[in-house]
Amino acid sequence: MRSDLVFKAISHVSNRYQLCQLASKATRKLHRPNTRVQDTANAVFARFQSIDPVALEPLEAPASHPTEERRAA
Image (cartoon, rainbow, N blue to C red; front, side, top):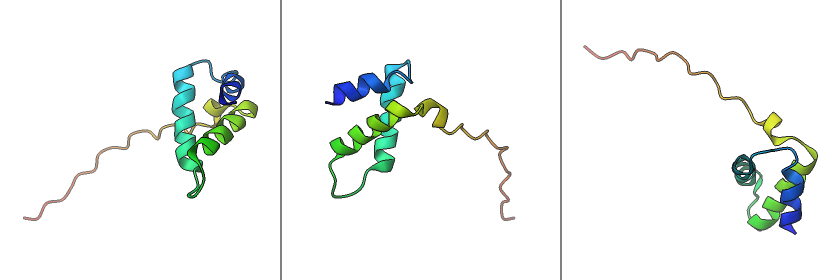
């Protein structure tokens, strides 16, 4: 059942809201057409049982300096 998968996955993420956010992002990226979204979500939670999803989350790129746009005279 999915609740078992969630409880095992929460051992790596202490915040349930963050777990839901990470799982939804991963489900959107891993989902394949012609498959059920529920199966993809279960696969994501199964992966989160064995790995730490927070450690794998890419860091946000630092904001680059705004470049000036050239205007025609």
